[in-house]
Amino acid sequence: MRLATTLFLCLLGSPALAQQCDRWTAGMEEDEGGPRMMVSVCAQASASDADAQHALLVTCAGKDALSLRYLPHADESYPPGGNEEYITKMKFVFDQEEFVHDARFEGMDGAMVIDTNVMTPFVRAMSSEGKVTLADVNSDKVPVASFTLNGAKEALDKLIKSCGQ
Image 1 (cartoon, rainbow, N blue to C red):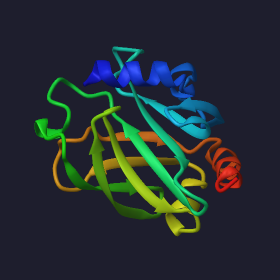
Image 2: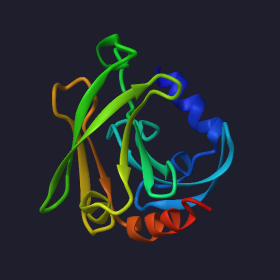
Image 3: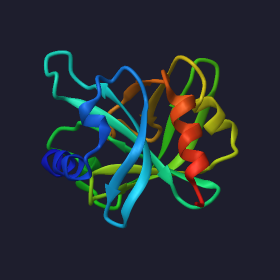
Image 4: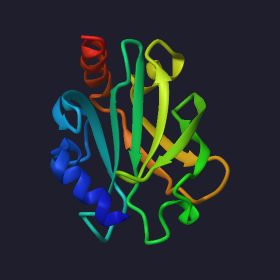
């Protein structure tokens, strides 16, 4: 699955692979449905392997909705427990706030997918300073990752303005 995730990101041309994991980026990316606005950030998954990165990608899922795709750098047991239909709750922990969202595994790119509305306290928290940590509430089957929020507000604002256009 790690290979599939890497290939997907290479084909997608994701800025997550090109950036230094120190800030969010926004830009047009080629997707299976054509070009679309995407914001992304990465996080080092291993101190000993510079290529081992987790990625968080956000795209529009309609005029007032966003789709978050968490692509963890995972071992060979991924998808979670070998279950291609894995469903869980993911916890997002910010400095002062915590949010729990339903998440589902999608095998095409090995992502845990979370859908949310644009105008929510959760999206406002993602536009704050500091960092966000993601964890699987139900188990340790999905790797935990922490992402910077540096540049998230600007990137998310740019993405949200493009939704519905």
